[in-house]
Image (cartoon, one colour):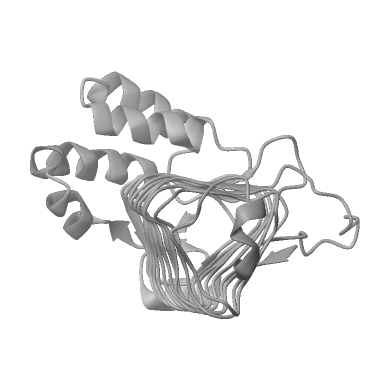
Length: 280
């Protein structure tokens, strides 16, 4: 590693590096990257234009970041997976981050164990002390409330919202526009457009999210699809066949059916009432 006072040895010019920060000679930083005090950039780290490290950020490569990302103090990105079987000396596949993301205080994202990097898409907002485990994949425009946790190999679709201290078990998926309320956790897949209010249960469609996303015209067919899937006592296979037959012309209903059909862990079950949810 080299200190900021030795910028001439960097692979690319850097507009502003605080003198208390340390930047590896293998790092590749866009000209207008701003590195605040007490940051460490170690190994092969690529930072796109307009990226800002406010202070006390530790990036441990291999990491590739797009443009316009902001890292608040105490973010730790790219360290070894929290897995007893992984040798922390191995680089693994690293971390891939898109553009326009905001990582608030204390965010941790661990590097991948598999062939593909842990991946964060574009315009996501990870609030304080959130965590994305190794090999997780987050699409675009997701919001993770304070303390929310993604286990290893978790996959989030676009515009997924997790409330504070919500958690998703390893290998689970949350479909597009799904929402997990604060304090809740899931151990199976959460279908797109659905909301989980309590642990291991689905309560309803994410009507607010659907309307805000401009899908008002799809609410009624989705309500019918939700009824078929969760309220009529059918097996998932039968329900999916019926949704595709009766509502397949609606692209969101088709997306819901395809998600359920492709589930390997099974889908989160339906809570008919708070009492029923508490019994599960």
